[in-house]
Image 1 (cartoon, each protein chain N blue to C red):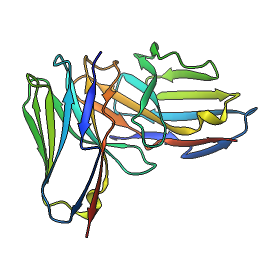
Image 2: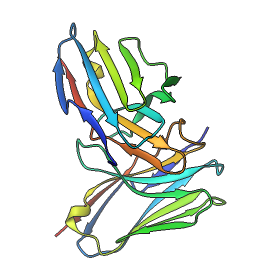
Image 3: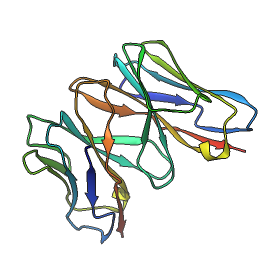
Image 4: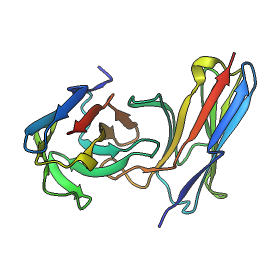
Amino acid sequence: KQEVTQIPAALSVPEGENLVLNCSFTDSAIYNLQWFRQDPGKGLTSLLLIQSSQREQTSGRLNASLDKSSGRSTLYIAASQPGDSATYLCALSYNQAGTALIFGKGTTLSVSS
Amino acid sequence: DTEVTQTPKHLVMGMTNKKSLKCEQHMGHRAMYWYKQKAKKPPELMFVYSYEKLSINESVPSRFSPECPNSSLLNLHLHALQPEDSALYLCASSQTGLGYTFGSGTRLTVV
């Protein structure tokens, strides 16, 4: 059974710091890996999608990498801002559309000004 | 249109009520999902519709009844819920190679 682990569970940093969120998984036969952001009581916002044939994706201050062989993905946030405060979820899919996402428990980030 | 729209945003219902949650997407995605999320937990899968047919039911109690009237719409009918069913209900859609898109959710409170 696939297990997805996110470390750390919570993180507090001052504004301006660069930071790394980690996601590890036990079964490397994944189809996609997707990072989401969730604000309290809100839905999930997709940040980055990495397909199994890709190694990384970038969007603005965000960069996500994927190493299937080691079962790891990292989300790098550059020059953090208070508006980045949220819970970040890593999720895996194993097949094409129509299969469930498997979520980690998330990393709750707090960026202070 | 790159959104999944859920209505209502908030719902309070009694244990004897019947209500429905609605979800709509116009991205042409052929898979649609219902997830349930409790506070400080990741979303948990409830149902999957693929090409308008129910393909996965994660042993959800029968007081939750999904319906997919067409490729753009997904409903979740609620009846005789319990207070422990209070949660954020999320709808999502997906298409091969494009990842998953989630709606903003319905905050359900059962009193």
